[in-house]
Length: 233
Length: 233
DNA sequence: TCGATTTTGTGAACGCCTTCACCAGCTCGT
DNA sequence: ACGAGCTGGTGAAGGCGTTCACAAAATCGA
Image 1 (cartoon, rainbow over the protein chains, first blue to last red):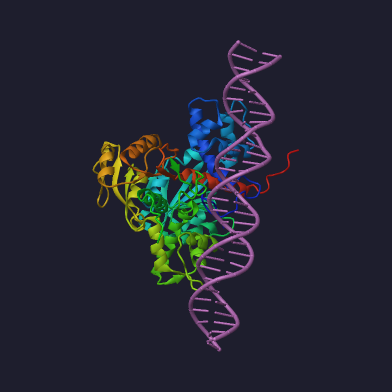
Image 2: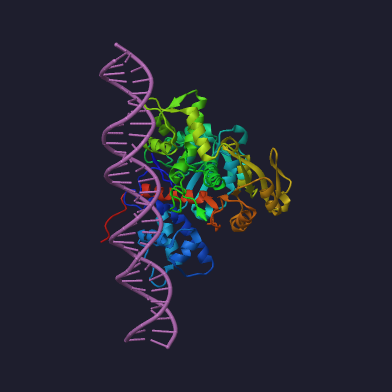
């Protein structure tokens, strides 16, 4: 598989093939977001400093990232907002909409199905499936009714799905992942706290909220105990 | 502020002070999870290879990580599961429970409040607040009733909260963050797609599901167009 | 037209993190 | 006892990624 680096994440392969550095790819969505906002305010151009401000990335880093796109800004002026937005959108594959299947219609699954941020950012959830027969037919949001997990194959194939969101209980995640891959899914966003095993060519990104809190807790602990580092003897 | 590296994430400061490398800290929760599982199966010891298998990290990396803890395993045998678990738990601050306030009781907020994975991994949500008066008093889960966002200060102070989860609409996030920080919160897990501005000493970790999908989409695009790299002329 | 100012693009240096390779130390069978 | 086989610890090397510093190029005012 190709477990994509999260940020610290994870493999080690960076510039896959002849593409952009992974770290850059992870930041392009941030730039896109910032540009959309800037455009809404009527700005025609923006500097790397402005983008830095809006995204929390250093301006040098912004310039380096954008230079990888060959996206030539104009010295003394900055970047053309509309043009840069289009360029990033193309690089990131936002010229098309990506059909996504959401597996698992529990609390989290329903929350994700209702999230308006996907549509505005290039992804469309075209199906919500669940293993629990009691949930079948339930409408989670306008135009989305919970379907049976047994129909995964058909759904993936008929609706040109290549990306899946896994919001199942932990114990079911690997099995569902296997079936998704078998059906043709090649990218998985996994919310279940397990390391999925998938074949080469399938990308997995992991979101583990409990782990995020644990990382924060580590730093909290260090804040509260200042200088715990007394020498032993 | 101290915007914590996600994985590619984000500042650049690594081994803060005399602590563990950030990349290692981000993996400790994974090891902990794996160890808990191993312990449930009755294994008394485990090798770095087993941990590697269970977490998706390379075995060399596992050993390097654990060596930072001074956690001496036994050559020829492996690590003592119970002992290592305790050691990681201590390093990561799991010997105590961390009180967390959840801000925003929309779909996502409710899903997070109901998530059983927090309690088992060291965090306890002690309050759910929302700005919408219509939601006040609503019970989201046993023992948790939605409280007013006006009481944030009091809640944070009285219940010894140092970590907050932000699940508000985007436009409200920065304002809430400011108030949380003012109330004494020093760690924020932010689900709103904005780069929060917080003072030094406050840690922010960002979860942006739409961005995760966009990153996957980037790689999907590259998969579908094999060798798009024809020379120009 | 020219100089001051702004801002990009980029090579070089630096630092973090991962991987490699191998030694040290433990167990177990004989 | 001792040798074979595992398995952890760790220095060295290499790869990515960020930051630095500055030259190149554009605008603007006089």
